[in-house]
Length: 448
Image (tube, rainbow, N blue to C red):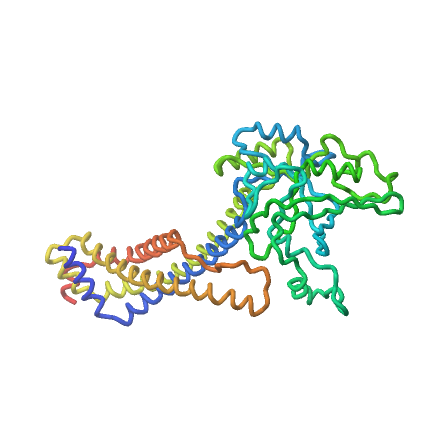
């Protein structure tokens, strides 16, 4: 029998009981759509969380949060050793003051973080500038993209007072610095105490660069980035590490005093490629460094979501298995109703394998039609979920929803998994009825 004849035989048989076949296909459609839609939640959440985690982050970056022991700082000897390790592109080391200095341009003032770093290493490891250039002298600095917005006019017009929290945004727009800060000279005010008297030293600094804005829209960068040469001058004035404020000179202990190598509180190691990051992270951990990397976090996150997705797929498989009962009943009834046709086929010399094949093809036909419609409907459900869920969350004022958040995502791999599962379950359901068809006695069938 030709393949076209087989298809025609199947088509004619399916016409005999359309309502039963329709309900069988409908069960397959619902189970397939349920399987894909349910599992798509796991894929969608994983994609959204990984995207949010990696946005604006360097996958080849490892953050060192200190070293095991009494002193958690990272010193120059550590940095030099790390720089010589295999697959290390560069090391960024920074210090942040324990006081937030006051920065001013005329009447415009703002207290911001001051971060001191080696500019050559920062340039090497990928610190990006939106405008300007890297500092070449210790009195030159780079500021964050939002630095100018934080500079506020501290002179109020008649009758005006400092804003409340609700008024702050409107007040900030009115009084923030409107000019371009690039090329401007600002003053950094560092304070310390001499007995009961507070003393201040002003450092005149020129803004020569503006850092690239943060990747996330809701984040702001108003920090000031200066060279580590300036950091030494600041410590020389305060007499303490990280410009820590002491109530009097007598309160400055030996541990608080700066040394030739005062250590760094923020150290970032950059690998030469993503494939070497895991081995590099393990090596640093073995050397007793406290390590954090986005790559390690994503690896843990992927494991969690893998278990989550397997659980969702398993629940979907149960729905497909329930639908397979309908396929089994439909094909069993088809064999019973077509006893006469099977007897005629056998009397004409059809082999049992051909009869088995015809019924298995009919089973696959039902499964494929249901599968196609199930996939189409699952994509529609996924689209609807991605539109509805953010709207619902916003309606209930749920904060922290990242832009481009996807509650559901259907990759090609999920479609292939659902296809294989559905077809496999359908074939298993149709095996017994097809075998029963081959066991029908010819004489009994022709008598009927």
